[in-house]
Length: 310
Image (cartoon, rainbow, N blue to C red; front, side):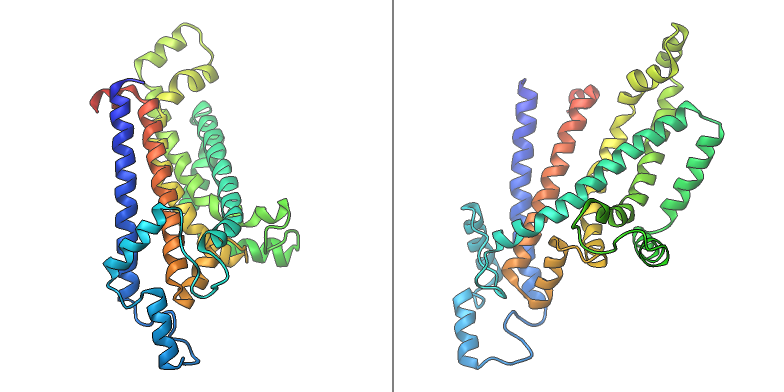
């Protein structure tokens, strides 16, 4: 590993730490700005009890002081205890819910990426034919409709009208079909269009004509020569795609009654459970920041021109 790579990775690590610190501070400040508090419930507490609870959790302190204390605890691996569920730590709630969210998003991501590769490469291979035209029309339709449009439609068609698939929970593999379809339709359509455009641009360059003139087969030209040079815009979109999948899965989890992080976040917001809200926000934020940084590293590794410019 040369010095440029060491400097690049060190800079990325500093950016991650700074982003997390800013995220925690803003999260506390925004929560303090919201009306109501964790102990403002329908059944009003006695003022003495409420005052004692406020002191116990340090809620009377300024937001920046709370965020500083929280950041210090977080650096020691302690995300605190849930305010609405005092017998459970925030870490245990996140770890118990994370598996469903991660499984759902990983399955979706694999299908989106593989589907985009297959459709874009096949469209380019048979450019101008019926396959390309059909894929183009389908992708335009999928892009023009929001992801959540598909959820209720799929539930109605396959869950109730044809009664073919389950519409709730993730208890067996077939339970994944409808939520994964809901999540992957639009992102896959965007990736197909993006990769297909990049493939088409690179396919018209001189080195492709040279390879074809030497008798290299069409599929080999596409997969061994054109594909790698077409990956940068594809990889650049993976970061925002993951952000979209994770945020979109919040609503999909609610729609399909999946016990994941999205459901926990909605419950925590309703309970004004500050520690759980901050823990979940920080967890999601850290996940997205790390994934985006890894994609930056991957793009730099794939395209040598980016290394030279840096």
